[in-house]
Amino acid sequence: MSKPILIVGAGPAGLAAAHALASVGQSVVLVEKAERLGGAPILSGYAKLVPSGEWAKDAIGGMVRRVQESRLIEVHRGATVTAFSGAPGEFNVELSDGKRLQAGAAILCTGFTHFDSLNKPEWGFGTFPDVVTTAQVEQMISSGQGVRCPSDGRKPQRVAILLCVGSRDRQIGREWCSKICCTVSANIAMEIREELPDCHVYVYYMDIRTFGLYETKYYWRSQEEFKVKYIKARIAEVTSDGEKLIVKGEDTLVKRPITIPFDMVVHAIGMDPNVENKSIASVFGVTLEAHGYLARGNSYANTAETSRPGVFVAGAATGPETIDDSIAQGHAAAARALALMQPAQARA
Amino acid sequence: MPIHEKSLIRPENLKTHEQLVVDGVDVSGHWSTFIQSRVVTDYNEALQEEIAALPGGEHIHRCWQCGSCTNACTVNAVNPDFNPRYWIYLVRMGMESELLRDKDIIWQCVSCNKCTYACPRDVVPEGVMKALSHWLELKGHTRKSPSMIFDEVFTEQVIQRGRIEEGRIIQRFFRRTGQALGQDWLIEMGRRLLRRLPLGMLTRLGLASVRAPRTHGWARSREALREYVAEEHARQRRALGLSELIEGAQRDAAGIPHA
Image 1 (cartoon, rainbow over the protein chains, first blue to last red):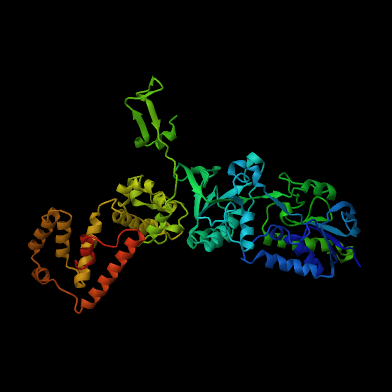
Image 2 (cartoon, each protein chain N blue to C red):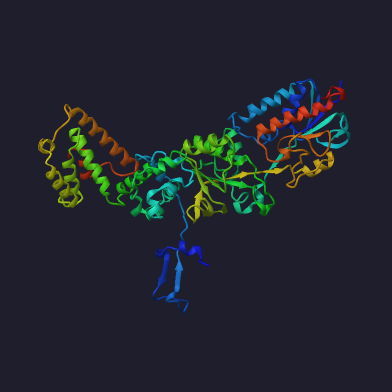
């Protein structure tokens, strides 16, 4: 019996990697710091996922189930890796729950942390209850409660979605584009319009980056079918007149300042590097790239590599990533880790 | 270096008091000049729906502000203030007061449709311009344009008889727009016709203007068309929040008998 492969993090990438390995007979030890498996889509209560529109609890829930049902996958919940040493093929691992094991390779699927909107106080989050984040709107939808103003539970009649909250913002040290928020926001805008047809939804943007095929399904469709309005304006501040939220900025296309009342303001929050990346980097002896994500060792020949041989990486741990690409990267990392486990003569 | 923001100041927003004393300080005239805010304080969410309810405006919500229409525009080349992209934006966002500032040039679209072919999103900007002119007129912001009056005279005859007779159209058009029938070009045309003396043609022309031909069995079509036009007028007025009663001239245009 060969040594297991250690997978850290049970989000889309980790679940995909674990399943891929188990399905070819490779044993896996899956360590997840939360008490539930599923990663951000489950822990943050996402509603319908981009691009399939399946509910997160069904799509990612299915991935969780097949991992839980596998005899080859040993799951450690509420646990972290506290020590990691050795060389490829014979890593020594210690977990916070006391478990010690030897692993042939490790795959880090440690994901990201949602941007905390309190870091942009001028946009009213934490000050006004009706300023919420995209993650909160996802929860309103996935819980079945529907999109309501948290202050009094009323149905909003006008919603503003602010893009690039915690992304592309040098002032707060976040220069990256979080890649998926434009698409997610267009998706949320359509869901609001679907649930509340009388509610008008405005998206305030710097650029719209509904990349690739999302252009049709999200950017165009949200305008053509759902009449979502896009306004090129970087919002200066969100205040309140005591009744409504007041959004201030400049409509750059008409060169006019705007001071518009809204019932609800949604921050399209970005993806920060996992807040624990520094300790993850030090435990596993891997390096971080300039923004604080786990650094890839190679951009082309082996995209799953980190700076340390035998330690691989997949998903949003390496930078803002979509769910489907994270899953693909989980599979890719599984193949790379598995290759390492083969006897030397079996390798091409 | 010129200050570009100066171009954003509107003369009507410059306020000056000839006589003004504040806290005992005389700030009369130039000293009291201040610029009123030009902040947009609300969106009129009905505006886009209103334009979309008029023929031609149906696809306005597709616009993503690339500016292809304005770049392709024949009228823009002559008058840089003629900017379909900008007006589409104002309508989509509901900036009605801003739109009305341009009411005297919006109807100048010549319907060349270059914008329609340039538009990557099938907004049909030419249709939107038509809808905009129509909207301005229905809401009472502008008077009927001569081309609108011509269309009415033309439609009226088609509905009435199932065909048109050019002589009558021209006569009525000139009468309704208050123009003299004895236009130079018309007299010149008549003179040249007479010089060639095309007897057959002149006979047909004369007969047609006297007999005012009709399409055979047109009565039922006329009724159906009148009904449709009346319904359509009522629908448009409802969409714009106007009373459904329409004025005499429009009744004439639609060929609807006066009550």
